[in-house]
Image (tube, rainbow, N blue to C red; front, side, top):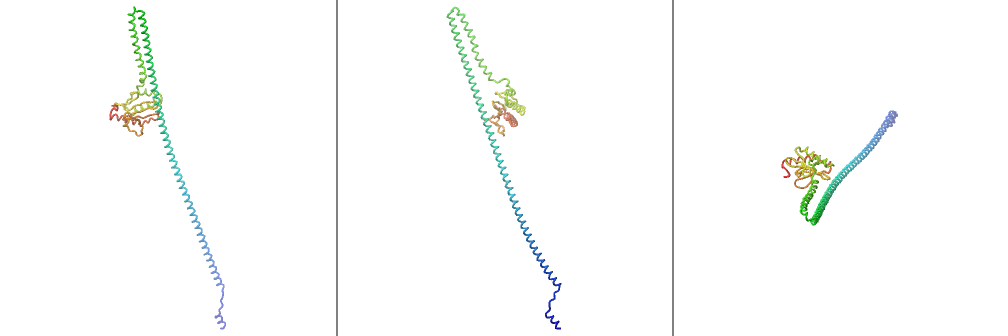
Length: 324
């Protein structure tokens, strides 16, 4: 009994192998759980670091793309500016070229006008010289005739004094001399007719074709082209030489003319003021007539000129003869 009570009061723990195994398992499970938690935490940290790195990379890529887009935009703007500059420079160059061409044309016109005026002055001076020479020749002829008459008179007086008996016969001689002198007075009239023949136009120029054929340069081609243009546009029109130039007219009167100068050809219209001129080709001053100046064969603009011809014919049909 004593032994049993003693054991109940101070019982000794009994350690079994099963309890030890359980405790070790618990400890191992705890350690494993701690390891798992630490691994998970490390994984989370690593994932966070990776995500932060990716975000940083994305930001860097976005910045790079923005820089590239800004560079592209700046390059496009620069290219547009260069293109606009090139266009402006081209426009300026074309304007300058047009101005130079216009100035050259004006200078050519001025030079041609000066040349024509010089030629006209030369012709006038030559005509004056020719008239002076003709007047001198006439004066010398008159002086010679006067001297011859004086010599004849002196010879007759000497004969009268030497032979008074033959006075009756010698009186008849002055009549013959007078008769001979009469044709000499008519001689200056023949001399006066010769310059008239030179100043009158040649008989071959009585037609428009002959007028064009006598111009042996580009002017003849231009005259023939203009005449053909009039014939095509106005079938009822006829051409003839009036006022030393080709004139085209219908039953209602003249409406156009052609006149060739030394360096250009004029194609004129009696009712030029009333014509529609969108290209501003007509020139001249006055109340009615206008003309187109042609300095080379390439200046013939057939469409505009044919329109002028048709308008001139219709205006004459409405308003009648412009010369009346």
